[in-house]
Length: 621
Image (tube, rainbow, N blue to C red):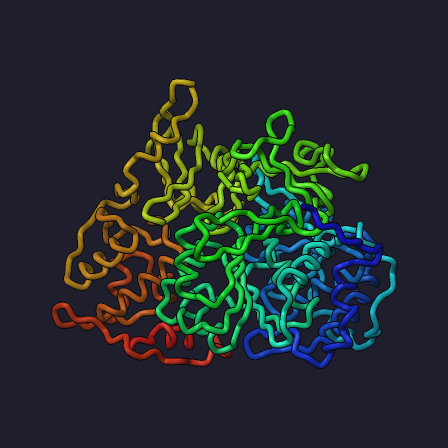
């Protein structure tokens, strides 16, 4: 049953923030490290910045690229841009220059707003650094702007992985994200004491909700630092700051539950799982550990203003469903002829309603994926073809089945293999490429199978080439060279046969070498357990083995239990067993002994730098 609410012309994202501001203007709005800002000051500063940006020639419906680190200033900039009637285009500072250039051009950004440390990435005439204008902020009015922005104007342009070698820019309007946040505010109202943690990078759509939902509700928004990629540190921060609400991808939630200090996070009232399919096993594990915490499975693509359905998982449930739709939103499960399927039959998920975005920056891609809504009650409505497959149960619940196409979700990142494959085919010596997600024992690895014309092609050079055009999460952890792709009876590439290849085989460019001493043997044993790979050599690279922040956390804790003194910083600097062993201290423990885990040093998370990180990770007495 669709619940419709009325959205007025003035229902914009910044108006949602501004309209109740007087109720909590002196309250803390944002906390980041040692810094904080009140609601009143946040509004005033964003108004002043918006006037400066307007003075640079911005008009309603323009786009502004934003390249900035996580900070309070990040939110001020986001607010200022939308107060101008413009759309912000989030650009992660660590994206390759080639990708950044494409995003700016595709979005039609008038200029880029950044900080001085990233100014060199852009053309001088097309960039504004905050440091260059902060001295003039006080010359501008602190009052809200009145420039006639309405709900149909664009609000942000979010880029996702594309199938043809370049990312896709999704144009979302105010109406969609305001509808989403109003739905969340009614479904999950915050108490005055609510503290919400933003973990998602602002270049991912979940960040829009993580930031603006609490700010529209008078809650206290906490922005996580880069060090909270370590889930032990994350748990410490949640505990010390009494965080009540936060999002997790299922991959990250799995790692969080494995932390020895996670159980102390009793302040958490609600967890929202999004970005990947939430399994019953994981949901049940979470609820058993957090009986008094509500767990919600949220579903939705970037093309539909973040999330469109919600389902609360309870321990007595035998399945995790997609749940009920948000306000003014219709979920259709249709067959190839766009007819509704019967309960139990598989069909494609289409989404209709006000949260459907304007489309892509590429009009051809828009026409292929956004089609007239045949079932809408209002004329001119469109529905989005998600590529997801589902069915209705006899109880009218939506049961997610999987993808119709090749799109992957790896640790919450949406990845189109075609974009990686297109880049690989540009490399001299690669005839064809196929990128697959290999999952074994719960470990996910992005694997590139490449048909090569040169058997001596160097995979480290290939990796370097990809880094020039793709973000880090799209770089395969492993490259496997084949002379010819195996074909099935239909003449198509046999993916199953490729995935059956022994990925534990040593694919290092260096010759396999065994440990030469007790220290290396101990490290090798731990690495083999974490990666579930018995064929690791001392020269194999942590990242090539599929290592990430989750694996790093496990390795550091297990190595410390065996008498090693190290931090995650060490692991990222010395990426092979040999180099790591040569550069860290080791005290051999008695047989069957391990470091004591009785007590944990509860260090303040407010001054989180590398030295403090090392202390926190050195928590075992």
